[in-house]
Image 1: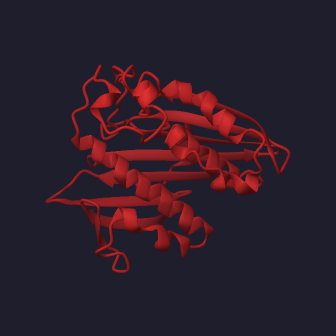
Image 2: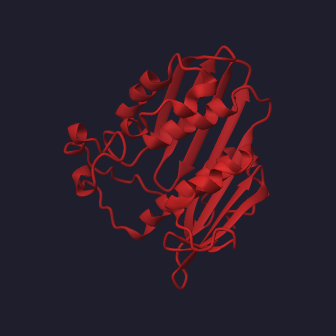
Length: 242
């Protein structure tokens, strides 16, 4: 297996309920929305693995943010940085697919740098969708993105169809998070060692008392390892994690 960052997301709708689950090197978490086909009546989430000791407090914040909100307006709800950004995104994905019939499985891979360049790929339901090459945060390929930075993709994403836009948002965020593989973040380090305000855990009122968990990180580049391994059937045949 190529060394690199791996992330999987599984979105599963059913009548009146939809869940979205994520696992990567640093997180495993799931969000479930109960709804009446229009408005979310209940938000339940779980952090099965999280990198900081105070991350689980974001569960109640997510419920506060989205309970009673219409599915169609989830994307304009705001307050992302006051939430766990990963739970927040899962809630958006779940809402976007709430009234669909079929599950959606995303498989994401971002290689470790080789001669300064990284490859970032995304498959949807085992079919390749995106294949990027980057040097740092700057695109080398595809040609229509060459020279742009990851943070400059909003216009490109806005010009994509629904599936393409969702895929672009997912892979962009994964490519940013993947930089964490080059960082040494020892267990016990306080959250104040990083810039504040980026998410629930890093807000000033709790960063000083939140520390890095022991054993929170998993390297899915190891043979036989895979995110959401208990749900592997949804990802069989994907080309993104070879």
